[in-house]
Image 1 (cartoon, helix red, strand yellow):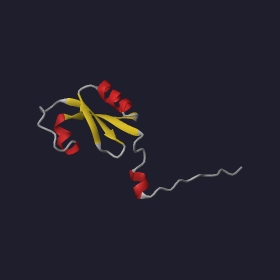
Image 2 (image 1 turned 120 degrees about the horizontal axis):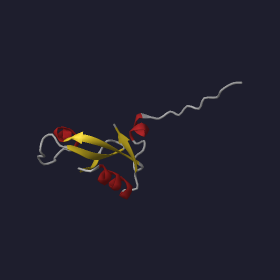
Image 3 (image 1 turned 90 degrees about the vertical axis):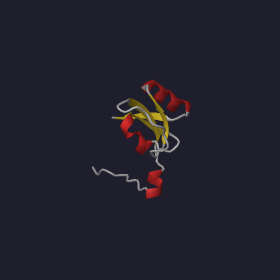
Image 4 (image 1 turned 120 degrees about the vertical axis):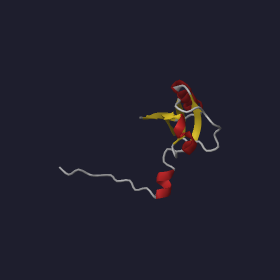
Length: 85
């Protein structure tokens, strides 16, 4: 019996937009790392653990101190949330 492989090819542009408007990812982030992810963010106390919600392309959507708030925000935007550990 021969196994048939289905391969999907994506261009770099198609790959960059994969999941756009459909998927968002949540991750816990240290307040010391925020400047690189959230440009223009005002100063926040050092050493805080926060939850960030990002679009599939990595664009920041929101920042909160509770995981449940990040989850609720994803759902309000009709996005499927995934958690990054």
